[in-house]
Image 1 (cartoon, rainbow, N blue to C red):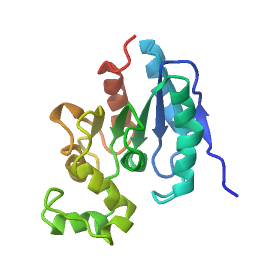
Image 2: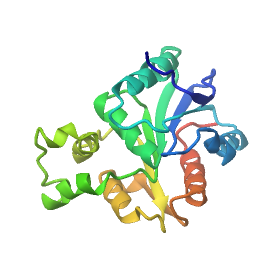
Image 3: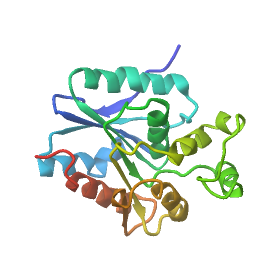
Length: 214
C-alpha cells in the first residue's frame, strides 16, 4: 500500500499552477507561512499554489513521484492549466529530476537554492573535468543525483527556468555550477543564506518576471 501525497494549497481555476516542492525536513505549510501565497495575492496574479510534502522522501521514490504526476500535475493540465514545477533546496533537485524523467511535463521551473547533490556524486563530475567533459557510466546513472546532472548537461533550451540563491548560501558555489547550465538571464542572486531571508525575495523576483501576467 502506498501513502497518499500530503499537500497544502489548492489547484483551483487559475490558468497557471505552481507545484512547489519544499526542502528536506520542511513542512509545506512553511511555504505559505513565509508569504509565498500572499505575494501572489498582492500582485493579483492568475496563479494557484500547491505545496507537496516531500519530507523523508528521497529522489529514488519512484511511486511517490508517479503520484505527483497522476494526482496533481496531470489533472491540472487536463483542465487546461499551465503547470510550473518549483522547488526549494532538496525540492529543487527533485523538481529537476521529475522534469528530466518526463520531458515536456512542466511549463517551466522555479529553482530556489536547489540542492546541487552530495559530495560523492558531484565529485564524480569534478574528477571528470566538469559537466561538459563527464561521460556518465551505467553505474553513474544508478545514482538519481547523477541522472539530474546528466540532464543538466543539455537542459531543454525552450524550457523557462528561474534559478536563484542567497549570496551567503552555504551551497552557493555549487548552486552556481547548477545555475551556469542555464542562460544568464535565468540566474539570480540576492542577499541572504540558505533560508527564507533569500528564498522569499527570490520568489517575489520570480513573480515579477512576468510569466503570469495580471
